[in-house]
Image (cartoon, rainbow, N blue to C red; front, side):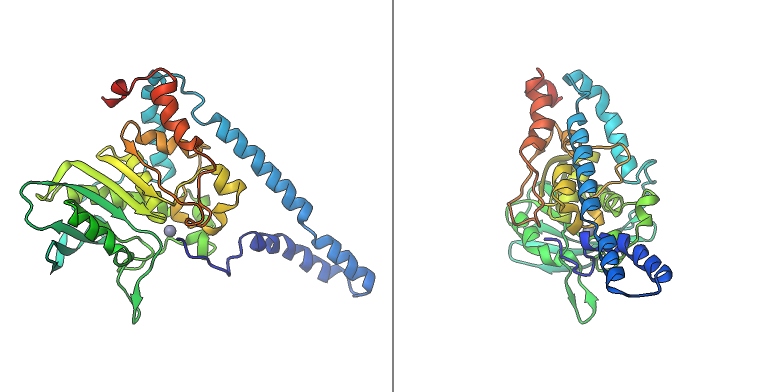
Length: 357
Ligand SMILES: [Zn+2]
């Protein structure tokens, strides 16, 4: 679950932003503080009507985006023609177009832990020169052949002790262990914000770095890039069947799971757990106010999120989320999945067999 930063204030913070200039202007031009003046100032500070108008505007805009999402796809042929265009748009909205050069990963194994059922390797690699990604690789004992692999991507669970960050992978180690016990190689990687080498991806969420959006930057793109490079690393390992790789993760990891699955077809199955929803839930329900930059694209092309799910098809996608367990982040209805998969694969005449190719 994404931690809540009470100081950020969501809607309250925006009210102050509107209200402060009004207050400062009033202090300059009104020399007296008589009761009438005070009443007038109180009246000027009322923003409920403006808030309501903005909410109505967003509600209407979200309705437009929801209705236009995938409306241009009338057949499987339409989708096959447009899929790569949409994928290119997603790369761009994540700041990954043009795609960075795939430089030498320079992987290093810094230690091993032996368990009766699996081995855990402590690793790091460089997704770009100098951009270190730290992780743990869980390998089942006594593998007789290359095994299917899972990239597990972490949510917002920092693990720190005595000012040392052990990385959020530490909080999710039970998932790595579970996959290894069940025959999968599992790579669990840290995020920018909460890794062993701590960076920043809480730009607007915590630090009011609104220029990130203005400059087209979202840390979601860096997290997605690190995931793509993690796939590159998994495919270098002899223990891994390179044709059988899946991705899963919770909260922020849920978001990275489906960014990565939508961008990279090496992912054969994706199970984002929480961290994924639609614009209605994000904007109209106010979910966006409590969630982190790493969960959002810079929405240049005015997408709604069923398009992300659509880009995973025809590969398997299971969206997993429990109501109340995801900081209210729950798709407003099953429409997100039905829009992207049902309409493309079934309702518009495309057969399952046709889409498998
Ligand atoms: Zn985040």
